[in-house]
Amino acid sequence: MKKLMVLMVAGIVCMGLTACEGTEFDPSAISEVSRQVEEVTASVEEISEYVGEIQSSVQEGIDEANAVMEWYKTEAWANNPWISTPVTEEEVEGLIDAGQKEINAYIGENAVYDILSASDIEFFNEYFNDGRNNGFLLSTYECPEACDASQIFSRYSDAIEEVTDEDTEDDYAGKVPEEGVNATLLGNLGIENRELNTPLKFKKGSNGRYLFLDDVKDTVKLNCDGGFYYNNIFVIMMRAENQDTPFALTVLTKDDDGSVKIQMNYWSDDMEEVQWDGSFLYDLYDMMQDSDIQRVMNIPGFTGDVSLGAEIAADAMTGGKGLEEVAKLVSDAKDEAKTYVQEFEGYEVYYSNLDPSAVGEYVVSQIDVSSGNFKTAEGAGIGTTVEQLKEMYGDGVITRLAAGREQIMYTKGKYNMLFLIDKAGKVEEMTLYINEEFNK
Image (cartoon, one colour):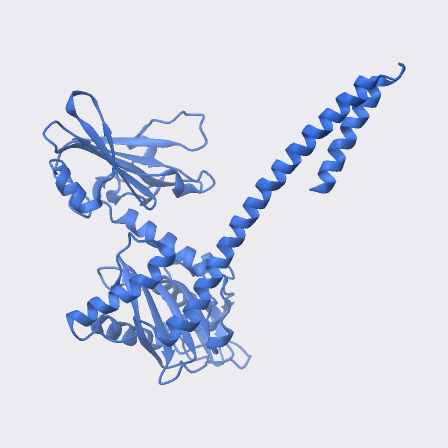
């Protein structure tokens, strides 16, 4: 910053002296240069103060993230409110309150969390101690693409086949066919091998392409100690049977059909050596907000039922037609980010490529409803009273309109809800849309 100030001042002095060249000494010129120097100095001080505020804000964020991780590794680990299995309704309420008190301090007061039930814990114990799934807890990754698949397939799996002399001259312990690798990854991560940051390399075998393993390691018996869930997102803790370590903290999604996809996993042989940079909490918060969007409302779109925030491929085909053929372009054709709208009886669905760099990828960015029996996840729809809205979402931001009408807006994470209220105090129209924070 000092260098910047010196350069700016030097530049002004040079301009002042140039103005004086070829003339007699003019005291007013020196005075003018001095005045400009004072102005620049004041501006530099303002910039310096602003930069200092930004640096302070960033440092506060880093300190807070580190505090979260320290809390988790000490207090939460030693006396975790989620670990005990609930027995009575009173104990369940106590556990939820204790867990929320800690998490809400960092994530917010609006979310509602539930403690894993005994049946949930039983499900995850069975799921992750299946040899086909166990290996997914043995490497650390913050997104499915970063998973160390070589670590996974070195463990026992139904996909592993015995190596024969026809396959290779090398001394391998086993092989996994390419289709077996993809099926296993899709089942647990929702992605194929080619989508990994470090894809596995296959070799030609006797009758196909295989991943050859020079070692097949034993799986680790892991117990699910507990955790919590929010919508379809589960945060669960696993430990080696009857031991503190090895340890895994896993974030996954579990759909109604029982299918599980692991989103993040933190693995350690030594709890004291776990190093997290705080991104886990931010990623989890984003996932929670995205899950809020997905459960706002299901409504028919051109690819079947869709929900706010649902991803749509521009070339998705329904009856031989893609997005451009079934929806009308409503943004400026020259705009980089484009929005299409498809009109139905009583409602409209908007599709936008909020991230133009993701070529061909659109999301349902807005849903307008003027009639019909469509409801939000909490039950709001056409005809819902203002009193019912406030019970569901709180007071909201109210704007008075002409002719005795008003509108109420609610912001929930990454989306907004706008309800138009008629003179009778009931919802006449509603708009659900992704707010600007979604693409930041």
